[in-house]
Length: 206
Length: 101
Image (tube, rainbow over all chains, first blue to last red; front, side):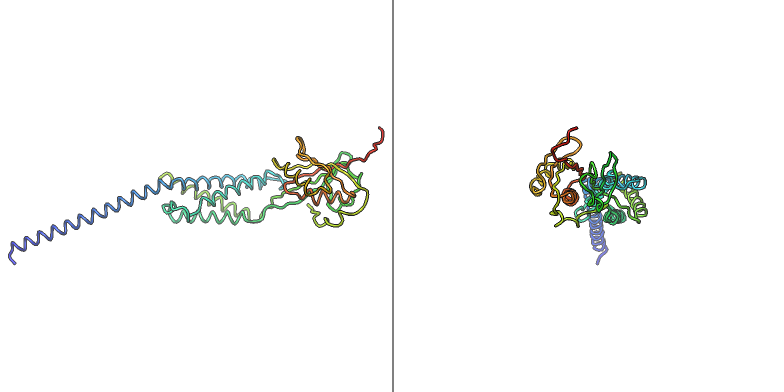
């Protein structure tokens, strides 16, 4: 092969390598740009889902705090307000369960695994805590004699005659029964919600 | 806290002097109509009148039982156990003729 031919083929080879490299670089740049655009579009589209979890988590945090305060300070566990606060906590927890549903929420792909695990862990903690039987029903019987109310048992009621009272009052009481593990669980849930709120804030800020 | 469910049954038909009473019933909001209907339809052998009212109570029923024991069982075992009934207040009717005073 003459030097001219070598130079000719060498030039073609260099040109081919250059062209191929340029093509590969362009291809990867294009793929990278597309991936980034797709990620941003998906993030925008699923931002509402992130916000829903964030809101639900904050609601759980507030409701739990209210319940904890009431639970510690209440003297009569049949106080309807305690029951209402528990109902609110349950409603907020339901909202959280619905929000943290990874199977129907492809937006969660863009959260990191650690955060997903934290959200799931909180869901389990809430389920464990709120699935305990907490309400007990019963009737309280009182009679008014000479203007004075007196509590009696159901058996005593059956012994009473027609003129033994001025008024018979029977009240259905719903008692919120405390759980012995509540204190530890509430602390754990509080810690978990605080962490999730902090992490989600960072995601939403991004 | 007690329940009288186990006392319901045959004893409600026990004999004795019949007795009438007004029962004032407290229920959550928007449940008065349902209670009135249930009292008049399902317990018409005991409930002679029932109506939803404004004021301290939500429903007032007039009930008649064959004895005081049956009345107490009716109140505790039946009316108090109707869904949504929170409080019942029972006032026994003094049978006429009334003493002059």
